[in-house]
Image (cartoon, rainbow, N blue to C red; front, side, top):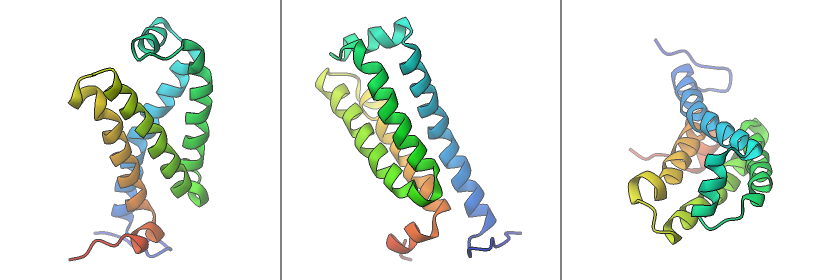
Length: 134
């Protein structure tokens, strides 16, 4: 049985949205941490993508700010838009170096789909703006 939350939201949809949100958030938090720590794999990855490893920390800060905005309900749509731009940069970077399509180039797209999908299920206002028609 599905219960209705105070905002007119079904608890099943809300929990599905939370779970769908948790997956990319955990990945992005991991990404932020390793960009701050700069292990050899990050330095090598940056070099292979044509970026200086000195950009690791500034990019981690940008990513963390976007992620925090995404996690705050009042600013979640702004955070999702900013993360979409950040992930678009990752797509462009991987495309530029000729990385494999489904594993590297499209991976940020998959992350973005999970971010927006989770937000769509959690946020009734977003569903009002972009309703799914029957």
